[in-house]
Length: 207
Image 1 (cartoon, rainbow, N blue to C red):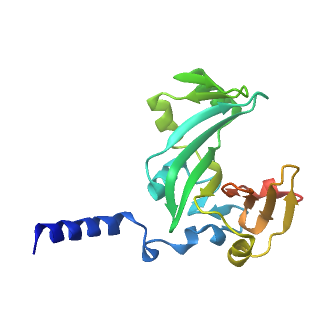
Image 2: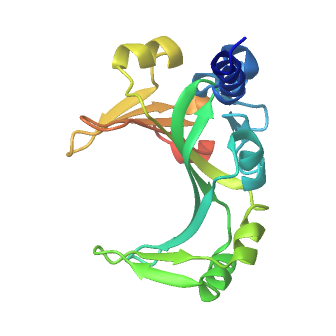
Image 3: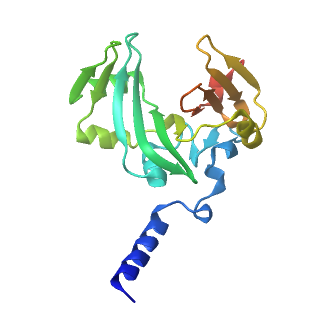
């Protein structure tokens, strides 16, 4: 057997271990299989909102996570984590997790920020030191958002998720599809990637 064939076989085996295969994941993690349990907690993407931590996200979807703090011009602050490339089953997606911190905890982390940048819109972005970044992996996830690489059609959404409880279209033409039974707010953006945002049930009051 030639070295070319041997190397090709080795590379094929490596790729088999990298590329997600249909048999290698629990179908419960797929976004359309999200549920709400008897305690009213949203179970989505293999996580339980307000209980699962950022560390659990890293165990499920990889360690290449960027954690940042934000402050809007309104003064609202948040801690968010980004995975720019992950696979939920076979779905190639970016993931954004919003962490549950109290206002006091956010203030403390902001005060220790390693570097602050300000956007043209006036929002402040704070990069953390290494120890604070590690600490935030122990905090629970309040919301998690998927931004799949491939866009969804309305027909595909209804086939997978069922009919939404309600639909709202804003002045910018963004369609919001609400699925409270899955804790899901789905945003359809014309000419851009769709957004699947999983939130606690309290966020769906009246929707």
